[in-house]
Amino acid sequence: MSEFVENLKEVFAQFGSIEAKRMFGGFGVYHDNLMFGLVAGDVLYLKADEESVGAFRNLGLPQFEYIKSGKITKISYYMAPEEIFDDSGQAEEWAVRAFEAALRARKPVHKSRARK
Picture 1 (spheres, rainbow, N blue to C red):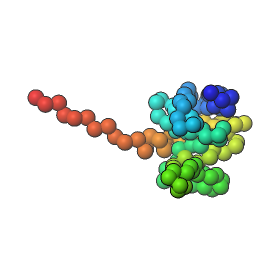
Picture 2 (cartoon, rainbow, N blue to C red):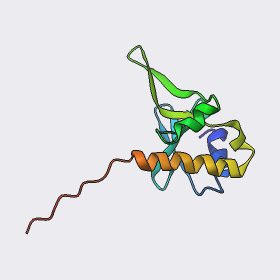
Picture 3 (cartoon, one colour):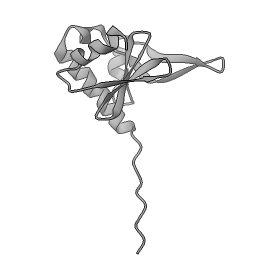
């Protein structure tokens, strides 16, 4: 695990415990078993949705993209603002925003009814 990824535990300490898991050449960043961030090339991206994307766009933060089958594919993660690495209050605010977006995006679990 890179030093950058290890440092995220300190960055998000005020928010709560996080875990980084390897995925596709980078890392997923999880809180309470829900992915709210990803790291690619030692760059942190945070989950966004309709309710939160404006905060990222207002700061001109780029959306995460990668090449798939020769085409650029964008997903709902945006680069984290630099301020979070020096300001624990900002880190917590952005982590909460990303975690809430991840919660809203989570698909509901349908439990089958028990048969009598």
